[in-house]
Image (tube, rainbow, N blue to C red):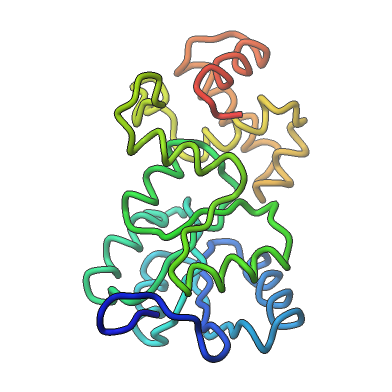
Length: 229
């Protein structure tokens, strides 16, 4: 939502929003919350559960703002950005993710997202965030802005953009590790990530193997050292 000169302007009506997340229940919940809370401020015009659906849907609906999940089975938010932004430069992307890991924040901002908020955000704050990015502001959940400042800074002590050891883990393994390090039980992790307890156990075993650690306490320290918690 910019003028011909590139200066952002306040939206004159509801911000047209497109939802991208591979969990249908989550999309339904966000849609219901936005539609019941702020019909005069936000209008959900479409949704998608995969990268391919997102690219097609955004092209069809031409939304003002895309609420974009970071991790999806077929490529994730960065892939959506890569495929959409060249042909639809006026569409604004706001990442909405369970992950608050520095590497996820940095990757999606580098790809072109205007902001990044976590799924712990309240419905009221999400509406405000959507409105703000549509007006040209950059919006981040608390503490995430520091990751971006570090990544685009050459000052001493800035957070590294990549970590070879961390790069060995898949995005889902990082999600599981992050919650494990915060003290979540396997059942709670499964509920949070919409996966089975057996799948959680499989991911934990894989992380232990890749990191060559022996228990969750060592994993917690490893995760903390890499600012995943």
